[in-house]
Amino acid sequence: MAHVVNFPFATNNGLGHGLFAAITKAVADYRLFLRTLNELRSLSDRELRDLGISSYSIREIAYDSVYGR
Image (cartoon, rainbow, N blue to C red; front, side, top):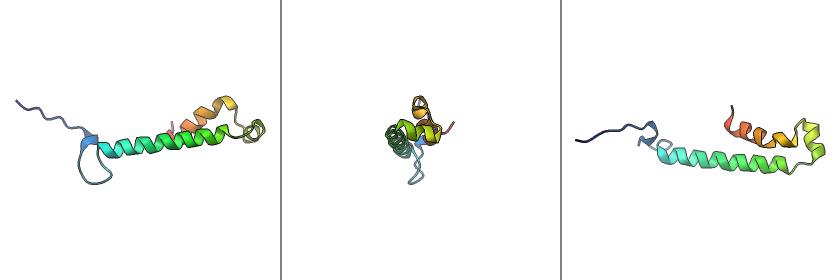
């Protein structure tokens, strides 16, 4: 007997849908996270202080800017 499993991310309704699109978006989001993280890490302590950012919160800020909460 055959079983049908319906995964909403595995549809084939054209470009922009399906598993490939989900993976592509995840990779793009991660690359944006890394770029944001590196840019924040490149700031001096004085620049971070001017922005009101602690060096300990850089990772959280980069994550929130890409993925939200």
